[in-house]
Length: 83
Image 1 (cartoon, helix red, strand yellow):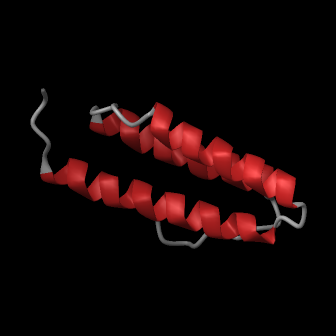
Image 2 (cartoon, rainbow, N blue to C red):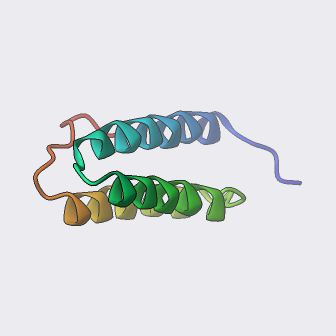
């Protein structure tokens, strides 16, 4: 097993912050079924990438997740701080 660095722990927190933020944002979806499906999709993406240990790949996946969230919910405003 690969030894985790400080950067891994920082990225883990950023991923958790992103996940929490994404779940909060879905509260704005008026259709409850669409909201549930969106939450399930977000969770499945996080789970699918759970075992990635490459720092660069984690950062890329996080950036892609932010882009996808903006595309799915264009009316939301993601915070300016990197999540």
